[in-house]
Amino acid sequence: MPGKPKERRCSECKAPVVEKPTVIEFGDQEIFLFHPVVCAKCLKSLCERFSTVCANCGGAIPPYSQVGVLKDEGGERQFVHMSTACQTVGSAFHGYWGRGKLHNFIQIEAC
Ligand SMILES: [Zn+2]
Ligand SMILES: [Zn+2]
Picture (cartoon, rainbow, N blue to C red):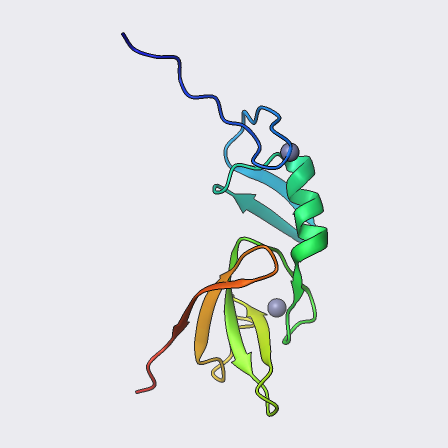
């Protein structure tokens, strides 16, 4: 017996989520989120709580997105957008910016 299609629910507030991806406007950016399943309202609040600042353009980098990672003199990590405008030659790392935390941190081999 074919079951009902699995209902998608917001992983934050458990509200049903019908659209995929979830799209919101955050600052001057449009954010598309496929995974995890989060409703637009919760995604907005996640962006407000967990976004970080791009060291290049000063804009917000929303959670659940790919980031370029720079190291400044003091060894502090700085993040930049994974865009041609912000991804400068100096960035030797990239990773995935989650809920205020860096995941899948990868060093790009220098050649
Ligand atoms: Zn929600
Ligand atoms: Zn930027």
